[in-house]
Length: 440
Image (cartoon, rainbow, N blue to C red; front, side):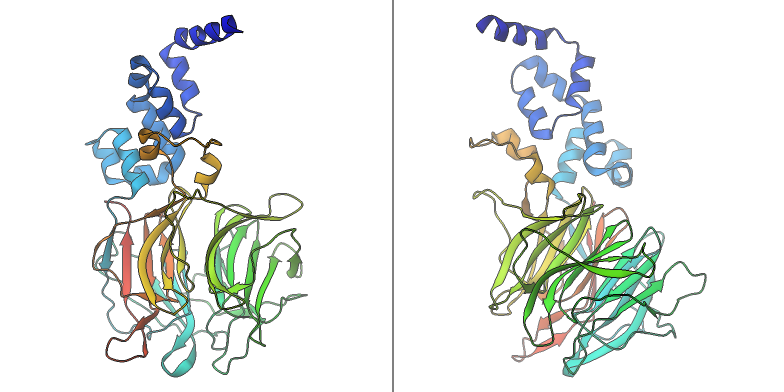
C-alpha cells in the first residue's frame, strides 16, 4: 500500500506543466488554491495568468469578463481580476435623474428589464389606492448615470392592483403578469401578457385565456423557469391565509394551462418572499413572512429538471454570516449566477437598506469536510452569503420596492418602495430611482 502511494505521488510530479494546467481547469477554485500550497512548483503553476483567465471566464462568463473595465486594459493580473469580481469590492450606488413626467411614488409594483426597456406596472400608493398604469423607459446605450426618461403610453392595461407578479420570457419576448390585490382587498387570479417585441412604441396588455388557474392571491413570488414555463409559489389568498403551493404555467401548451406541482417537501406558507431563476428549471426562494407573521431568512432551491420536481432547503455553515429575516426585499440575478438581495423589512416592519449576495453554487462547491478551511480557501472560495460594502448615495431604508438586473448582471436598478417618514409615524411611497453599479 505504501509503494502504491509513493508511486502516486511521483506520478503527479512527473506530469508536465501543460498537462497539469489541463487538469486544473476542471477543479473548483478552492481545490486549485489548495493544490498550490503543496510545493513551490505547484504554487508557481497555479499563479499562471492563463489559468486565472480561464477561471474568470468559467466562473463569470465571457460577456461579464469582456465588459469588466480592467480586463482589456490588463492593469492587473487575471487572479486579481477574479478576486475583484468575486468580492464585488467596487460596488457603488448612484441616484439617477428622472425628468418629468415620471411615475407616481409606489410600492408592491412590478419592475422588469425587457427588450432594452424598463417596464413598471401597477403598485399601491398614498391612501391605499391601487394603480393600473404602465410606464416604459428605454435604456440608454452608453450610460444610465445621466438618468432615464419615462414614457406613459396609451395602451390597454390590466385592472389596477398591487402585490402582483410580472416576469419576462426573454426567449419569446413576452411579459406575463399574474394575480395581485385590488384597492378593496380583493385578490385576482387572472393572467395577462404583453408582447415587448412589437414595432410600436408600446403594446397593450391582453388577458390570457387559461384552462385552469391557481387560487386568487397577492404578495406571492414568481419567476420564469425557462422552456416557456412560469412558476408561482405562495402568497395570501382572499381570506388572509398564506399559501405554500407551487404552480407552473406552461405556455407551450394550447391553450396555456396552470398546473399545481406536488413535491415531497416544500417551504412553509409565506408572502413577501422572492423567487429567482439561476438556471433553466432551477430557481431560488428566499425570505418572506410566514403564516404566523414570523419573518423568515431561509433559502430553498426548486428544481424542475427531473420528472419529479423537488424543493431542497439550502443550508449554510454556522460560521457563515447571513442577512436577518425579512420580507418585501428584492432579489436580482447578477453575474456568476449569484443573487443580489436588497432592503426589505423585519417582523416589526422596520425597513432595511443592506445589500447581500447569495451564491447558491457555493453549496455545491463546498467540500464535504468538517475541518476548517485554510486562509487561502477563505480568500478565494465562493461564499453562500456575503454582505457588500457599498459606496455612494444609497436609497432610504425601503421595502416592497421594484428592482431589475441590467445587461450581463453588472448593475441593478431600484425604483420606489415604502420608506419610513421621519416626521411622523407614517409611511411614504417613494419615487426615487437608484442604480447599484457592481463593476468599477
